[in-house]
Amino acid sequence: MKALSILMVFCLVACQNPNSTSKQETVNKAELEKVAGELMDRYYESNKSENNDDLNEIIADRGIVMGTDPNEVWDKNQLLENYEQYRQDPEMAQLLANLSFDIKDRRTIISENGSQAIVVDVVKTSFSELDTRSMSIIEKEGGEWKIVFANVAFLINNSDLARIDSLIIQ
Image: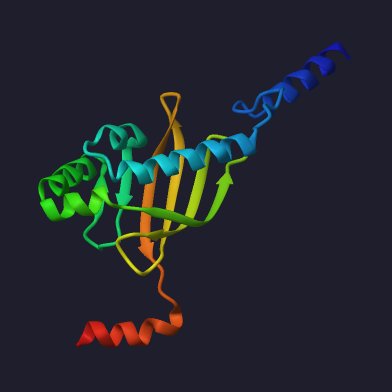
């Protein structure tokens, strides 16, 4: 009987998920949603900066950023280099300095364990008549929330595609 009890305890312990804790930590999703939104707002504002300091802090070392142009697929270092080049071009420097971002809609998904957030924004920007959709994945890196993936795309109504295609073909 004693051996059976020991065997049952052994089986129960062996079947436990090693990654789970006996006390489930409570994730404050509302607070994480606020933190994620603030990071995204800071990211938009960092595009206007005269240096790369804020972008360097916000983007994870392993981060990937995709812009609206098909050629804009950058790792962190490439992103920082491109922004530095933009600032050397007077026309681009002026465009960056005068950027504005009006968040029309923001949706945030927080992972169950609170280690990751996905933020999807519909944004009216000063550089286009078309709205954009910005999607970012945010994770903690070294105790700080960082953007590990960001993608920006222009929003075009499906009903306008034929007209836009005809303009491109001409």
